[in-house]
Length: 221
Image (cartoon, rainbow, N blue to C red; front, side):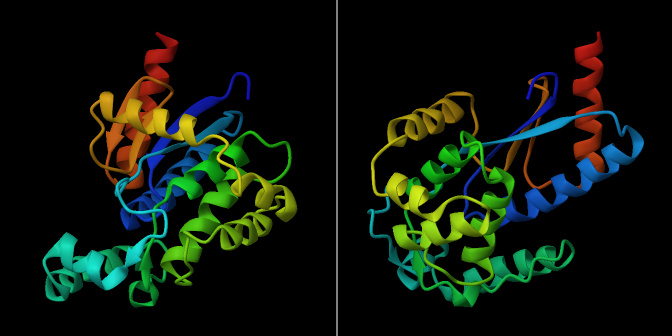
């Protein structure tokens, strides 16, 4: 999108704070459009696997929780904060509906594919993946499920299924993930505005708008 102000988002589709961060970014960009209707923005999604070592078939969610948080009690504390934050941005998290923790390589491949397609909407695909996992409890490690989710975002389901059954873009996704870590990114979401300023974490819209203003000033200067 030539001449657009770029917003690069590094995230993982199984990161609840990334979903919250997406909502807060949307709120910031909506305010930006109100103050500067002529500004064109382009959001670009980049992969970061929180659990790259999970097997392709994923693992039982209960086992994952025990390994990550040391047991269900600590997990309940963490997800209570997540659920409360989600309510402020209209995300009805249904954490207990998640039965299996997926490896997200295929989901990231699908996003990369969607961003290169002439049809469909990549942002809608990312939203659909977040919603499928965190609200509907669907398993993102199932390739047929991923193709179905892609169709809800305006992509041809047969094309999506053919792509996802291949290994196309696996190397590119892995390389993008590696570059993010080399840049010092160790947690997500991570936002880069106009290639100039960066913000880590699911910050509030005002903080994001401040970073955007800094980036635009740097571009102008």
